[in-house]
Image (cartoon, rainbow, N blue to C red):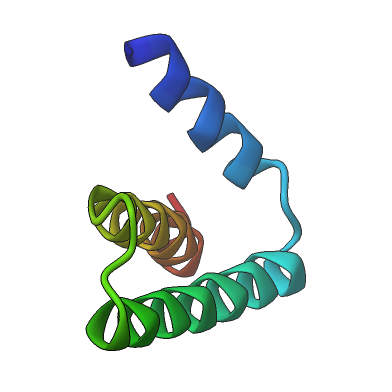
Length: 70
């Protein structure tokens, strides 16, 4: 499990700033669409929403680290 998280964060670190911002926007839009479709017709795996939120948080954390220069 720890190796999977490390791989995800390494992938985010390799992105350029513009690509990171674009990825955040895409993931937020995907989350909104999934939440809406879940409200209308329950999706098969509602835990997917939790995973999407966590992925967005990882991306925003990397964005914040860059803004602070860490």
